[in-house]
Image 1: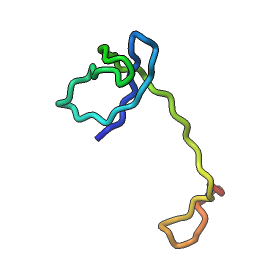
Image 2 (image 1 turned 90 degrees about the horizontal axis):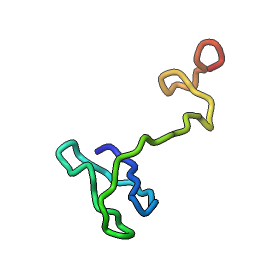
Image 3 (image 1 turned 45 degrees about the horizontal axis):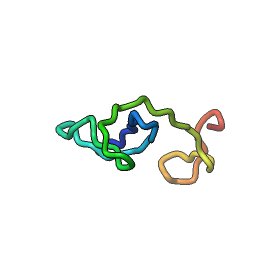
Image 4 (image 1 turned 60 degrees about the horizontal axis):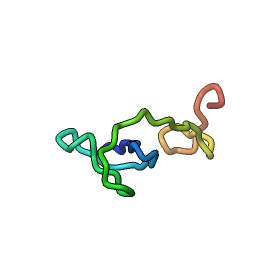
Amino acid sequence: MPLFEFRCSCGHIFEKLCRSSDNMNPECPKCGAASEKIISSFSVGRSAPATGCGMGEALPGGG
C-alpha cells in the first residue's frame, strides 16, 4: 500500500497508508476534521556504493 501525506485545515500534516479503494480524505488524527492529500517531497540518495548483481563488482562508470 502506498503511503500518502495529508494536511488538515488545522494545519496538522500526517501520513497514512491507503489503498486505492480507501477514503482519500481521512479524518485528522489531531482534531477529527476532513483532510486533503498533499504532494510529498522525498530525497533520493545512497549511503553505500552500488554493486553489480550483488557480486561485489562495481557498476560501470563508478556509479
